[in-house]
Image (tube, chains in turn blue, yellow):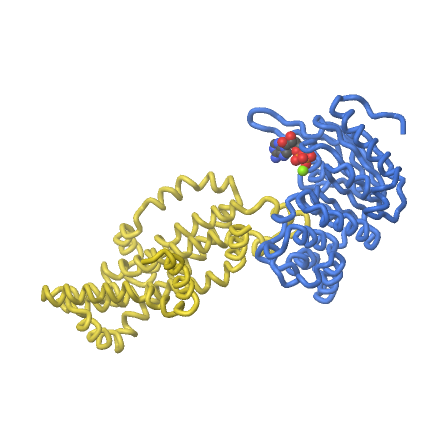
Amino acid sequence: MLDVTGLQKIYRGKERDVEAVRDLTFRLAEGELACLVGPSGCGKTTLLKCIAGLMEPTSGTVRLAGRDVTGPPPDMAVVFQEYGRSLFPWLTVRGNVELPLKEKKLPKERRAALVAESLEAVGLADAAGAYPWQLSGGMQQRVAIARAIAYEPRVLLMDEPFAAVDAQTRADLEDLIRTLWHRFSMTVLFVTHDIDEAVYLGQRVLVLSSSPTVIQDDVAVDLPDERDQLTTRADPRFTELRGRVYAEIQNAKRGTAAATTD
Amino acid sequence: MSVSDAPAPPRTARKARTGAGPLLRVLQVLLLPVLLILGWWAGSASSGSFYMPTPAVIAGTFGDVWFGERILTDALPSIGRLLSGFALGAAIGVGLGVVLGLSAPLRAFSEPVLEFFRAIPPPVLVPLLMLLIGVNTPMKLAVIVSGCVWPILLNTIEGVRAVDPVLTDTCRCYGIRGRRRLTTLVLRSASPQIMAGLRQGLSIAIILMVISEMFASNSGLGYAVVEFQRSFAIPEMWTGIVLLGLLGVVLSLLFGLVERRVLAWYHGLRAVTRDG
Ligand SMILES: Nc1ncnc2c1ncn2[C@@H]1O[C@H](COP(=O)(O)OP(=O)(O)O)[C@@H](O)[C@H]1O
Ligand SMILES: [Mg+2]
C-alpha cells in the first residue's frame, strides 16, 4: 500500500545543511494502523511531509498503491501537528469540514451527509456552527480529525496530534482514533513522541533513531484488538512492549544496532 | 471624607457603566464637538472677522447652499467620482497585490519601481494628467487612483505574503486550488491587512477628490469651495468645508460597518487569543 524506500531529506541552509532523515525504508499494508515513534527533532514531521507529497525528498521514493508520490495524492488526508493553525478561522466547523468535499465536487446532499457523519463520529455534532477559535484545543483537534475523515481517505497521516491536549482528552482521542480506524477502514500512520501512546494505539510501532535518522526497530504489537485504557495499559505484554521500544530508543541514542531478541 | 467612604468610587463607577451607560456614552461623543462649536462661536462672535462667520451663520447658509441644485451639480458628482476612483484603486490594488504577494520573483522585479511611484506625491501628477488626459472625469479618477492605490497594494502584498504556511499545506493536501484557493485561503487570510489598506486608501481618495477639482474644473465640492472663496462668499465656503468633513465621517462609519462584518472572525479570534 505505502512503500517508503531509501528516503533521505537534507535541508539546504545558508550556513550548513541539516540531514533531517538519512535512510528510511518501510512498508505499510492496506488497512494497517502503524505508529511512528521517535525523539523530538528526529525528522518525524519531515518524513510525514515527504509521504504526503508536500515536500520533495533529497533521495529515495515514496510509493502509494503502486504510484510514485510527487505531489499530494488525492486519497490521502493529513492531520497536522499545528492542528489549531490548520483550521480556517473564517470558516465555521462545518465550513472547515466541508471545504475539501467541495473541491472534490461532491453533490450537496452527499457533502452534508459526510459532514454530519464525521462530526457525529468525533462527538462534535453540536458544534457545527461554531468557529474553531471558539473551541478548546481538544475540540479543535477533533475538528481537524473530522475534516480528514469526511474526506474519505485511504491513507490518514497524523503528526503528533495529541501533543498539546490534556491527559483525559488525550485518552479519549486515542480511543476515538481506534474507533474511527475500525469504522472507516483506512491505513493510518500515526506519529508520536510518546512511547505508551504508540504501543497502545498501533498494530505496529516503527521506532526512529535520533538524527541522522534511520529505522531503529519495527515492533509488532500483539495486543488484543479490543483495547481499553485501563486493562490494556495494565496488561503485562503492554509493559513488555513498552520496555522494548524504550530500550530501542535508548540504544538509538547510544548508536547501537537494533536488538535482535524479542 | 471618612475612611468608610473609601469604597464608594468603584460603586459609582459600576453604576455609571450599567444604569447611566448610554447617556454617558452620548455625552462622551458629543461633549468635545459641542465645546469646540461653542469655542468657535465665542471666538468668531468676539473677533467679528469677515472670514470667520459664527456657527449660526454657517448652519443657516448650509441649507440654502446644499439642499438645492448644488447637490446635483457638485455634491453627487464628487461623491460619484470619489467612489468610482476608490473602487478602481481597490480593484487594481488588491488584484495586483495578490499577484505580487504570491510571486516572490515578480515582487523582487517590481519593488524598486513601486517604491519610486509610491514616493511621488499624487497631487503633483495633476498637471501632468491634465496634459495627458485633459480636464475631465477620467483625469480626476486617475488622480484619485494614483494616490489611493498604494496603501491598498502594499497592504495586500504584505497580507498575501503572510498566509500561514500550515493553511497553505492544508490546501495542498486537500487539493484546494485555483479560484477556491484564492477566495477561501488567500483573500480571506489577507483580509485584515486589505481592510487596513482600504481604510487608508479611502482617506487619501477623499483628499485627492477635492484636489483634483480645485485645479481646473467646473463642478464638484473642491471646485465649489474654491469658487466661493474667490467670490468672497465666505459662509458658503465654510459650508463646503463642513460638508466635506461630514462626508468623511459618514464614509468612515459605513466602512466601519462593512469591516465589522467582513472581519468578524478576526476580531473574535483576537479577543480569544488576548483573553487566553
Ligand atoms: N524547513 C526546515 N529547514 C531546515 N531545517 C529544518 C526544517 N524543518 C525541520 N528542520 C530540521 O530537521 C530536523 C527534523 O525536524 P522535524 O522533522 O520537524 O522533527 P520532528 O517532527 O521529529 O520533531 C530538525 O533538526 C529540524 O531542526
Ligand atoms: Mg514534528
